[in-house]
Image: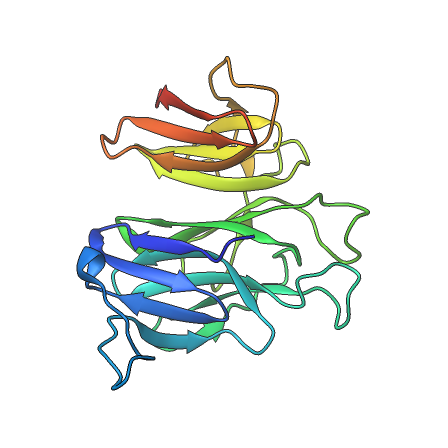
Length: 233
C-alpha cells in the first residue's frame, strides 16, 4: 500500500500525511522540507504523533484540529507478531488509540470525517469478515458520533466483501467495494439500507471514491479499468 495523504475537509491548505508518524502541514503548495541540507533548511511538516514502533498508517481523515489515523502493525497476515490494526485520534485534546470491542481487527482502508462535525467519523474495513483472518471480526463500515469512543456497524445489510472508501455528501453515503459502488441514506444506523449506485461500471474492484470539487458528482477509481464519474442522486 501507499502511505496516505489527506486534506482537511474544511481547509485545502491543511494537509496530513502518515507513515509510522502523523505529519501535519499548513503551507499547502508552498510546502518545503530540507532538514538534511547543510546547514539544515526549513521544513513545513510537523511530527504530531507516533502510532507506535512497527506500525504503518493506512488511512487518514482530518477536520480542523481533529485527526483520525488508521494503522496496522504487524501488517502481514500470519506474520510475527500477529496482525493488528487500530485507529488513533486526538479528538478530545490528546492522542490515543480508540478502544471499541466491536471494531474489526482488519486493514483500515478508509476514514471519512463529517465536514460539519469532527466527532462524526466513518471507518471502512477491507478484507472479508470470515475465515481469512482469525479473530478479524465482522463488518465493513462503522460510524461514530462521539469522536471514536463508540462505534456502530452500519454494514449489516451489505454483502460481506472488502470495502475501500466512503464519501459523505448531501445526506448520502457512497461506498466503494470490491464488487462495485453502493449508496445509502446517512441516517440509517444499524438498519442502513444499501443499494447499488449507478450502472456501467466495469466488473472490477473500486480502489477509491472521491467527491468532485463541484460537490455534485463522485469519481470512482477502479483496479485497472480507469476513472469513472457519476452524479450523486
